[in-house]
Image 1 (tube, one colour):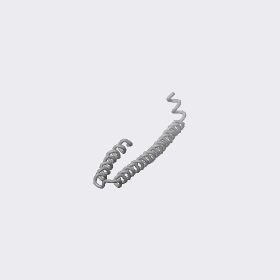
Image 2 (cartoon, rainbow, N blue to C red):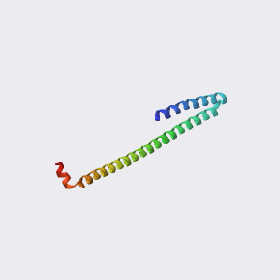
Image 3 (cartoon, rainbow, N blue to C red):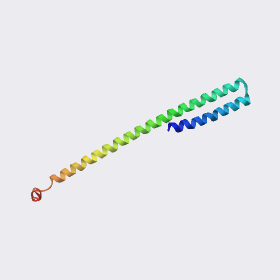
Length: 103
C-alpha cells in the first residue's frame, strides 16, 4: 500500500514540479521561486499527512482483525468444550446393562 501511495504522490510531485517550473517561466523573478517553494512544501505536507492516514488505517484494520480472530477462536473453543461435555454426559447416561452387554 505504501508503494502505491508513494508512486501516486511521486507522479503528483512531478506534476506539481512541472506547474511550478511553468509558473517560474511565465511569471519570472523572485516571486516564481517563492511560488515554487510553496508548491513543494504543500506537496511534502500532503504526502506526510497521507502516510499518517494510511498508517492509522492499517493499524485500525490490524486491531479489528485481531479482535475478530480472538472472538472467533474463543467461540470455537467454547463450542468444542460444549460438544465434549455433551458427549461425556451422553456417555454417562448409558444404562449399565447395555454397557455390560457390549463388553
